Length: 524
Image 1 (tube, rainbow, N blue to C red):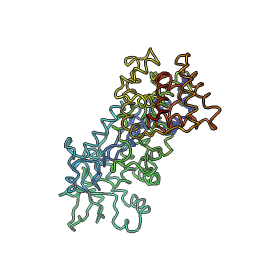
Image 2: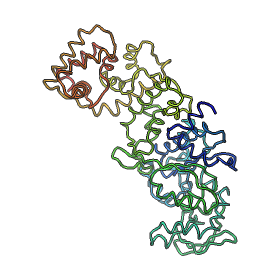
Image 3: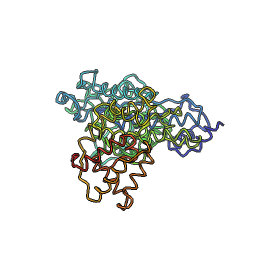
Image 4: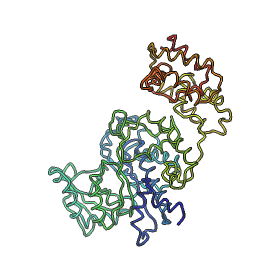
């Protein structure tokens, strides 16, 4: 066993822990289907949101960890439940009124309000695939519409007819009394309108695998369960899909966790072992509400990429998946800086530490070198005090601080500079609130200004930090009050960078001028 595989078999990084659980399934014999199957599901009822990407990125991390500890072939499927009926009209689409007449139709039968694809389901599937492709995920895309219509699901649907009573017993035990009266695991599509019908079954025919039901107007219909004439209710569909495909692993949000025993039982009733599961905590918006595809709250996929590189999003997804996370714009700078901190740490780590480092899982072991010579948070403060309108202005400061850096050899730095200007103008600038210094803070600022006027030690960040510290040491207890004053008086922010590093980047003379402006009340 190689050193890397040996370390992976004992790594406490959560992707390896999950991968080892999957591997235990095949300790005695390899999978009959020829590969280990990882699946992630997608409900395209609205535009894809960042939580959707989180499932695929985290599943990919576990798949990569599995590939490190096993030579068994693997496959990742992204399954879109695009046969779902449109229950309500999303609030974040154009031409919303035009969708009213298509309520309860499968999403792939609803016209695309954007006018770009053959249906709303196809549009949302394309949005998902486009984004997954930009990250280089290796996956196979499955559409429920195609899966049902092509006959790939027919054998399991027939088995569901044979085992109808057994599956119904599982489902009825989980339902309220009034729901039990009309519940069926099968949802037929109306032969005329195409709408998804939530109606009770009059009969289940096990000889020709048909179902008989009345529509809303009382007309009786009999249709085969095969060939795309029906779909399964979402809970039975989970277990049936696992059985049909032979799924070995799937993760989902904790809102599904209470249904896991139901999914598992139905999968086993249909003749297949239940997969391994991983339940993650939900993503919340700025107000602590669950992110929803339909309401479009939180950050969209494209919005994150407007302000930061994709790797920072992957880093955010890696961190503590079993802890609820606020997904709002203010988490982006921290994610960017922590990602680059981990890149820099990776270089000097041993094998065991590298496998515990998030960047190994983000990049599948092929970890790049960080070229960020200035933290993203520092760039934001630099954009703030310099009033930068484009990244070239920031480069003037960066190259004085790090003369060897340039846009060609430091592409991530160049990209981050552009992101910083954009982020500053959209989020930081509107929220800036300067205040006047107190008498004590004024004394300390004057001492700092005078110290900088006499400064002759170059742009050493640590030396400058010592000067900043000395000006506040005798005046402030705790010292964080001094640093808070610097941020609030000079930067118009409640928090900020290590100030010695900021002076080194912004410039000694420029900082003197900034303090003078603050003392004169010009920043208010």
